[in-house]
Amino acid sequence: MDEYHDIIEQLKPQRNICASARLRRLVSDASVCRRRTVGKSRWRWWTAAACLALILGTILPFKTTTTPSADNSHCVVYAAGQMVTGGEAQSIAEADVARMEQFLRTVEQQNSSEEEKVNQFIKHKSLLK
Image 1 (spheres, rainbow, N blue to C red):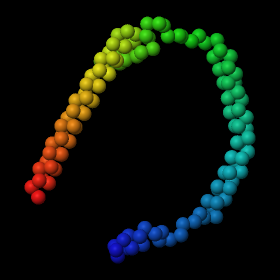
Image 2 (image 1 turned 180 degrees about the vertical axis):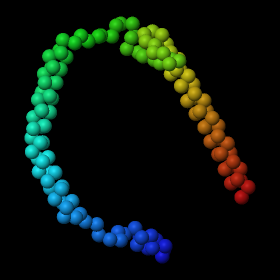
Image 3 (image 1 turned 90 degrees about the vertical axis):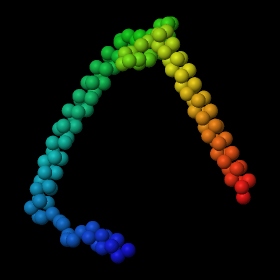
Image 4 (image 1 turned 180 degrees about the horizontal axis):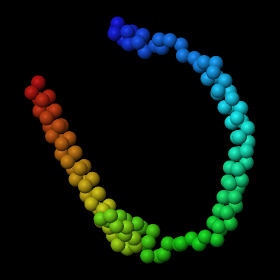
């Protein structure tokens, strides 16, 4: 417990740190200069943002959108690093889901088997008492 208090004492500041008068004057002079230039740069940013909004507002409505076709192109699968769409992607996805369901059934069977072994062990231990 004494070591804890020693560590806390060592972590406390050993001396006061404050800015010199020269540093304070430099900071105040810089802030005065910054106040003068901020007003000029703000209107530039607002003008640039307004121009960008105007350009995007005129271009985006004319942009054509693609609609998905009826051949299940909305299904996208990445197989071996390649993007696959359409019916082939649908069949790959269905096969993966089937494999995942089989894996989950196998895990569930193994868990129930292990749980049954534990229950038998507990019953055996209780009968020995």
